[in-house]
Image 1 (cartoon, rainbow, N blue to C red):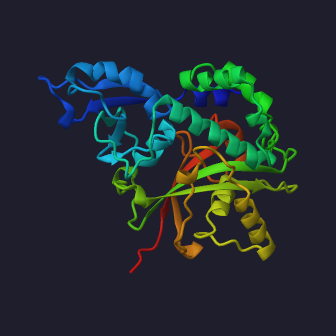
Image 2: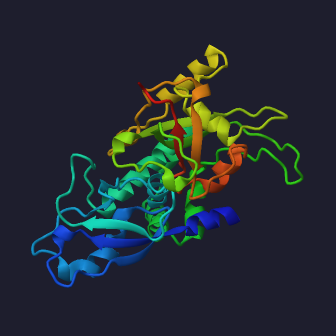
Image 3: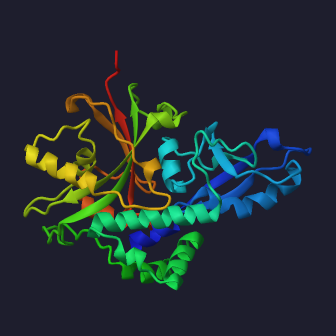
Length: 341
């Protein structure tokens, strides 16, 4: 079992969760709930731990769907907790202070969530989509036995049973890329592969040197979600870097200087990336409309699984070590772009 995979699986974020002041009905105000949230998990899965903590302070009556906010920004429940933290806390905040609401679900901002079932099917649909990108079909996921599906979900739900996850997920045959280097420093065999990637792009016009000075994200309109596969073509003597991957997903910012044939190939990839599903991933696919000359765009920050890897690192290493359980690689990127006059 990969040591890096074990670290990713066990990664957690300390949360300090406060009940919104409008829902407090007792004095003194209840203390915040302190929870260690798995990076690969989802906020709605924490509700069984949080609700009993605040139950005596809540207004009478049945609560609405539970939701969370960070500095007033409602948090999208289908994005893994670790990705939310990496995206919204340029300067990591520990513990991460969130507010929980048991009333007033912001349905104009968040898609409906019916608790664990919604999260489970969102996860399974992402897994189907990843399988389609990697293999050209999602038959292995669709044909999973009910016991395997239950065990796979429980391994993610508990975020502790990595062995069970590896055992079940290996049946899906979703291997993507091989190593692009050997331990001795030489070039290893490169395997062509299509990698499912979700890129979360945050563009700023102000420059900053320290992360604590980075502008705060106060609206989801400031984030572009890009759901595109990255295609790796092995070339002897060269390797495909993380920087190559990020730029290939962002042709609007970093125009491809290669031939139009490659551009047309990329368009075909984009057309093939989505699979039919009950919930779909429609809320995760937004294209970037803006286009700036690449010389004027600067990558200020790239964060994956809480780390900021060097852009020269082989992309295949990133994929093999830092991919989430649904076989998507989630990358948070901050771009410095010219100010539009």
